[in-house]
Length: 361
Image (cartoon, rainbow, N blue to C red):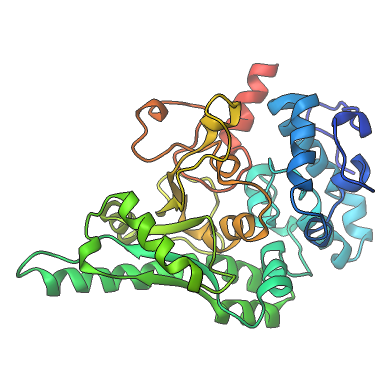
């Protein structure tokens, strides 16, 4: 397997965490698949992640995730000798159990800088397998609230046309993960079924023009009991004037998002993600309380895979999903180099990895 960048082999094992779920140890954790995660009792994944942080610390968990991901990649000789099915299984599942790395080969490629031909996945990606396991046969995706483009008197027609352009562009961008999976996996039938069932369910009402986020939360909470399971999440989406401009500008550019676009790039179109509740889930004095962002920007092209997989699997609470991203309208986050402007995943950005590497050296 591929060695770590610095040529050393870190010593990880059962001693790396203060807690393991019954029947689990470091080896099972570091090689776990989506099915393993879904088979855990509620709360066990979070306990193991907390145990790792207890022993290794935040940066130590990131280092472990990088080590496990590098270990999961085949060497050049193994790539020639190993069937694509097994290589794809390692690429898609290798570092899945750490919330510091994403379970999507495209995202891992972006973090590692791997060449395009190195990514080979002959099984459905994790987010699609989660839909098949839990929600196949019913709609899945997100509820999104329209808070823009209603227009004042005499502007309705123009603003409706602008909204129609936005929805069309947004719809193409949000389906980029399906384009990627159709292009780079042999799971065409599953991809087609998943795409047909996926939706962003827009809630539109002129009274929501420019509404405060708490008003939008109440609207979402009213709808919540009647939503199908695949749309019932602790996060919903929101299109503000800022979001509409971001998407339309990207659509009109010479480089709109596609299945070949690099993740973590600057200037990518985004949508606002809003926590359905402002409850952080921990006491204010708890260190994780500071990670919570009740509104944050999410790159549109990771909504269907990275974001949905996390909230759909219940792998972690909102405060852990948002710990590495700036909040919308949070003055303390401005200029904070340790926080990303856009959420792409819970993985550290390539820039952050480089910065931590230079500090460590």
